Length: 509
Image (tube, one colour):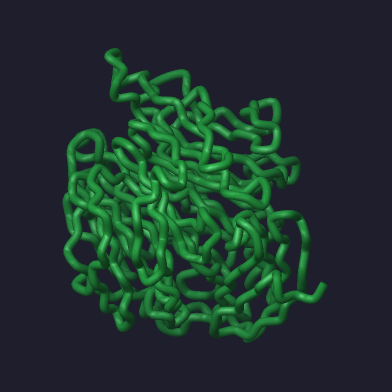
């Protein structure tokens, strides 16, 4: 109990540090307008193997500084939607891929063009980016190990100046005659070797639906795995694997034993102490874990307002089902807000059928308040993957949502009276061109924010874009970068209202 109370105090103190009362809140709260008609019709469809998945990858595939969209389709072919500006999107050519559960963008070959790791119920694919939103299937040519699993989660990190280490989370072993319950498949660690990657089994597997490689509360690189209790039934739990030591952490080391219907991971420092808090989505409670000074985690107090365990429309008392979760500053006030995509697995009678998405706006005291109804995004389809990204370049985070058995949704952020903002693009020489694993500190006269650059998390999809930071009233900031190898540069001065590129190769020394 003391740990929980201490967590609440830390949240309030951190929020005050990041954004004191002088920052102007958005006038009248967040607002979005429906731009779904701008997208070619696309639906995530399929049977049992596509109850989960439905991820979306957002990245710039043609170098025009406008985010493009790759959407999983399940039994429907996946789609690549090119952003032409002005909320005009068209379908770009793509090798036909069905069975796709999700995808994650990263520059695996360090050629300056984003590639795509495509997860499938069946053999995964590695699409090499060729520029101009063109891709080729390079699964064999780039040496991705063959597989035939039901892959549902992904993350990546770099351990040296080579190709990335990649982790792939697999769901139920479809070949197990005793399944599907208590038949979770093993996960995999793919390590770079000449000509490709070698595969190591990561056991035990508890039906992973989300993975994230990032610094944990100890400040060490770790692989967090969120697992679906529905199929491991008993004996499983959430996992944390120490990347440096290559082993799972235990309760004695501050890693709590938590069993839930884990579906998505979101990570962001909310308290201002440089340690990321972690949101875990689930059927029922959405669990926010607060990083503690001793390197452990504690469950956030219920009063923080983030549990979102039942639909907030008030028309159904059954539990909600959370999928993709993502932190982002919707009103640019300097406080990270939280979007959670919700939706019934399919026809599960124990859970609500019309499950509205959540838009939880962080308040000055560090609590969260539901705003999806007033914002206009409380839709009730079976949502799965999602992304917050600035699709029109106006400095406000927009929203795209992939739905199961219903068309995709696209929402433009038209919130009035938002604060100032800044986008930060990192570049460095070598294999890890986008500086995955870097930690960025943004300082203004109103306080500091710390953001990690990662690939992974969410539910079946992620982003490769500049980091977006709300600044509140501040019109300038100083940026310090701790690069993946531990080198620190800065402070780098930046003005609000645009993208600053920090190219390590161009820095003095």
